[in-house]
Image (cartoon, rainbow, N blue to C red; front, side, top):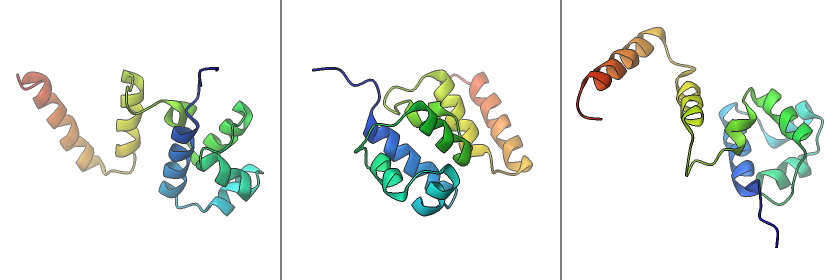
Length: 113
């Protein structure tokens, strides 16, 4: 039996997460990518493999990187964590971001971590 390189369930779950975050239906994502609604549904359920070209089409529409779809959350790399931080802060106000920076600076100077 061949080892899986891509976790299809994780890929599908992540596509659905970012699709909903952009407030897109499967139908709208299908239309914007040129894929069928059924194919999008099968990908999101982890029922089918997909090509790199399809992943890139989806990433372009969702405005994310392939890493955000493919990297597992159980063992994230530093880059994946940075991308997650950027993603979660992308819609925040400058005032909020300044507070975050001060908090990070505090943590870096403290002995808590």
